[in-house]
Amino acid sequence: MCTTIAEMNETMEQIKEWKRIKEQAEDNISALNAKAIEFLNETEACEAVDKKRNPIRKFTGTIFKATLSVQERESVDKTEVKKLLSTEDYKKVSKVSVYPVLRIS
Image (tube, rainbow, N blue to C red):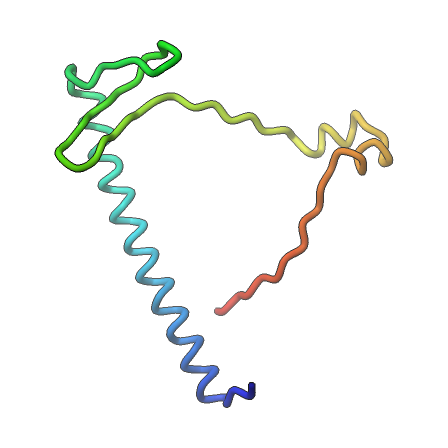
């Protein structure tokens, strides 16, 4: 499969255009998410509990259901872990992924 320079330029233009559209869509989604979160936080009728009896915010609409709850995420400082472990021990617990990355600028 041999692509011409003109076809490659067109492909890159299309990629940039779709990325711009995706960015606009993500901005719109973020704004709508903020609006939904504001509604859930401000509406007393949205108070509920989950299966584990933890407090959540919940709204059931005509088509969809929205829930807002607290979630935890733990991260580890890689440089601090390297200080605590030897190079060999660090290699035992670390995982390196290799994958192709396409950048168009």
